[in-house]
Structures are given as structure tokens and as C-alpha cells.
Amino acid sequence: MKELRHLNKYFKKYWLKLLIGIIITVIARIFQLVMPSYVNKIITAVEQFINSEIAKTEAKSLLMDYILIIVGAALLSGFFTFLMRQTIIYVSRYIEYDLKNEIFAHYQTLSLNFYKKNRTGDLMNRISEDVNQVRMYVGPAIMYGIQTLTLFACLVPLMFIKAPTLAAYTLLPLPILSILIYKISKVIHKRSTIVQQYLSTLSTFTQEVFSGVSVIKAYTLEAQTNSELKVLASDGKEKSMSLARVNAWFFPLMILLIGISNILVIYIGGRQYLRGDIGVGLIAEFILYVNMLTWPVAIVGWLTSIVQTAEASQKRINEFLGQQSELVNGTVELTDVEGKIEFKNVSFTYEDTEINALKNISFTINPGETTAILGKTGSGKSTVLDLVTRLYDVSSGEITIDNKPIGDYEITSLRQAIGAVPQDAFLFSDSIKNNIKFGKEDATEEEIVAKAKDAVVHENIMGFSKKYDTILGERGITLSGGQKQRVSIARALLKNPKIYLFDDCLSAVDTETEEDILNNLKKASKEKTTLIVSHRVSSAKNADKILVLEDGQLIQEGTHEELNTIEGYYKELYKNQLSDKEN
Ligand SMILES: Nc1ncnc2c1ncn2[C@@H]1O[C@H](COP(=O)(O)OP(=O)(O)OP(=O)(O)O)[C@@H](O)[C@H]1O
Image (tube, rainbow, N blue to C red):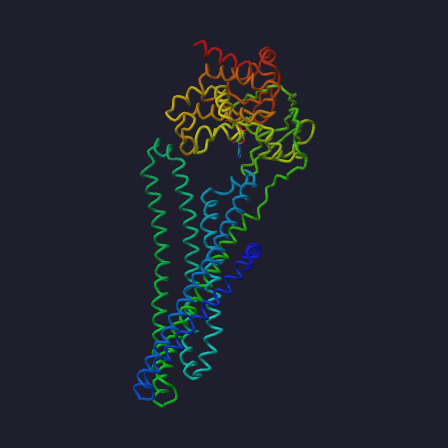
């Protein structure tokens, strides 16, 4: 139960609703108890009439009264049962909602490292399936638990008061039933945990297949993927079958034990009746009691299994909730940004791959300057940008913005000051308009169009039948690579931040469009600090400063003119790209 303590705050939050629910549950059960004793009374009245102890009219009126009481009690019990579900099950749904929101909000606070370590399918499973298991504990388990307790507390003493020997015999099989169900439930719990883990693996697998469907098709991997899924599915089938096998014991066992209890009531009760100790009505009353008790007794085992499953699920949830982002949030609000960025002896190693991506890098970008970063693939260009947005913290050295270490800034305000266009433009499955508006929620139609024009994507958008309202598929697959990049640029321009980070975001556009965009960017990024990562000299040559990285080290720094006069990577690249263009 240690893990489930996490839910106490929610119980506190909904304590009044819960308390009302508990009271209603108790009332509903008490009304249910009326029926057996009146069935006894009815049978006794009939018996008295047969034995000519009462007149026909009196017997009739007694029967009518008793039936009305039974119907009235049943209606009230039904009504309160309805209210019970309305309160306790509602509370469980509220808690489910709160818990999902809490997990989601916590996921959002975690750093990229967390997402690299854990797979999407697993993240999704914990927020859906595991929360669902926990809900079973806060809803049905509590509801049936109270129901069982109430029935036990009322029925067992009542039965012993009415007929102690009969009560002792008829209650005898019930603990055996409870123990057996508990044992079965334990096996069910074990096997359902295995099924649960399997479902996590299955959703991870399918999620990856659907996300990478284009690669699967391009490499005609359908058959291979199918056979992998078949192996996975048949493994899942085995696991589910083994769960179904043990589940199959549950109800037959219950019916068997109910039967035994009923036979005991009839046999022992019958003997007592023959001896004249009890009336026949009491036997009927006891049969009803036994049947009322069997389900709650069986449920004790089932509840144990629900609680165990919920505990296991909450443990998985707590595992993630307990994780903290390794990025410590600063306290200084980054407002009135000037845009000076300085790297001082910065080194960075990726935790998971232990790749030393940046090695002792130092440079300064003055406010309003445009700096281009060039270098071979894997030389560390994107890492520089990721460090500026504080997606990771430096391993050593220091990055400052406006002469203050970026660690001092409150992360949200830091990121609000930056407009980043990542290398692989990600668009959400929403309209183009909303994808651009991401940069500024309250942007007007005109602003959106103006920025789309600056990003040279307006014409393309107007070519779609629904124009800016065109809905993009998952990951924006209805747009070409270059169009996605440009929508992504429009989004950053709309944000109008003080610092722009463009990570190789013109790689998929032709050189002519690139030139148009660069011209527009030049206008838009006037007085803004801009960092452009690129493989093309054309994107870099007009920058105020060019940095060349190689294997995580800064090997060249200067303007186009300066670097073009000295032998080195830049001059070579320029020569090659120039001759490519001429050819
Ligand atoms: N998220 C990551 N986790 C672990 N290692 C990474 C990660 N991103 C990059 N690396 C590694 O760090 C090194 C620098 O990568 P980076 O993406 O900064 O290079 P780049 O110059 O931007 O490359 P490209 O031009 O191909 O985009 C590479 O060796 C890469 O394998």
C-alpha cells in the first residue's frame, strides 16, 4: 500500500463526496437486508394459514403488506445503489482525470534525457493503462469493500442471533471460498501484470511501426514487420490464454461453494425444522442470506487482487513522477533581452552515448549580430543551439546571455526569448494556421500571412484547397520537406523573439528560394541575434561572423572575406560549392 499513498491527496480533495458515497453505500445495503426477513414472514404467514392458525383475509392482508415492504425496500436499495455509483464511481473518475493531468504535466517538466531513456509506448501506457488500474482501486475496490464490510457487519451477527447453529454451518464454507478466491486472484494478479507489461511492449512496437511507416514501405519491410508482430502477438496470446485459464476457475468455484452453502442450509435447517427448532421460513431467509454473502466473500479475494494490481501500477507511475529534470530552474526573468550570447570554454558530453560533442569552445555573439555555424555532419553544430535553449546543460564551461549565466534564468522566460527552428521541422496534426500560430497564440490572420510570406511558403499554402485551414497529417506528412521547414520558420518569425536559432532549416529548399528566405530573414532579424547552422556557404556568407566546427572544436572564426583568404575548411567548402553552382 506504500505506493498507493500517493493518492491520499486526492482522497483528501474529494473527502466530502467520498464520505457521502460511503454513507449511501451503507444505507443501500441496509435496505437490502429487509427482504430475507420478510420472505421468512411471508412463508410463516402461509404456513399459519395452512395450519388454520389465521384466517384467509388476514393472511392475504399480511402477504400484501410484506410484499409492499419488500418492493419498497428493494426500490430504495436500488435507488441508493444508483446514488452510490454516482458518488464513488464519479470520485474515481475525478481522481483518474487528476492523476492523468498530474502525470502529463510532470512529463512536460522532464528534460530531453528522460524522453531519450524511455520509450513513447511506455510513457503512453503508464498514463492510460496504469492509471486505469489505479482507478479500479479508488472506485470499484472502495465501493465493493464498503459494501462487503457493511453486509458482514450486519448479516453475520443477525444470522447468529436468529439461529446460531444454522449460522455456524452455513458460514463455514465462506472462509474457504475467500481463501480460494484470494489464491486464484494472486495468480490472476501475477499473470495480468505479465499481460500488462506485454501490452506496453506491443504499444511501443506498433507506435514505432506507424511512425516509421514510410521507411517500412520504402524498404519493403512489411512482411518482416508482420512476422515480428506475429511473434509478438502469439507471445501475447499465450500470456492472455494463461490469464484466461486461471480466470475461468473464478466463477465455477464460486457457484460450487454457493451450492455447498445452500445445501448445508437446507440439510441442517431441514433437520432443525423436523426437530421443531425453527420454522421453514427461516430456512428460506438463510438461503437468501447465504446468497447475499457469497459475492462479498468472493470479492474479498478479488479486491485484494485489484489493490495489488493498483499498487504495481502506481509504482510504475511513481517511478516517473519521482524523476526530476536535471535542469535546475533559475530565478531571474529574462526580459528586455539585448541578445549577447557568449560561450566560455564550453564542453559538452551526451550522457547516454558519452559522445564528447563540444570541446572547450569559446566565442561571443554581439547583440543583433548574425552568426553562421558551419562544419561537417556530427561536428557539434546542433548541440551548440541545443545548449543555448538549455535543452541540456553544459558539462563544463559557461554560456551567458546578456552577461548572465543561462542557468540563472527562469527556463520559460529564456525559451520565450528564443525562436528556434529545429533541423527536423515538427508539425502537429492540426491546421497550417494553428501550426504557425504556435509562435503567438493571439496572432491575427494578417500577421500569420505576413510571416508565411517572409518564409516564402504563402504561395504553397494558397495552392491547397483549404489554404491556411488545411489540416496536416501526423508529423505534417501532407507537406514536402521544404514546405515543412518553411512553415516552421514562419512559426518562429511570428514569435518575434530577440534571439533566432535556425538549425539547418533551409536544407530542403532550392537555392533560389533559400536566397529569398535569407533576404527576408535578414530584414526580420534586424537587431536580433541570429544563429544559423548550415552546410551551405550561401546561407553563411552574409553573416557577421562565421564559426567552423570540426569534431566538436572551433577551428575557424571570422567573416566570409577573412575566412576566404586563409587556407582551411571554409575556403575549401566555398570553392567546392562555387564550382558545383557553376557546373
Ligand atoms: N541527442 C543526442 N544524444 C546523444 N548523442 C547525440 C545527440 N545528438 C547528437 N549526438 C552526437 O553528438 C555529436 C554532435 O552532434 P550534432 O547533432 O551537434 O552535430 P551536427 O554538426 O549538428 O550534425 P549535422 O550536421 O549532421 O546536423 C554527434 O556525434 C552525434 O552523434
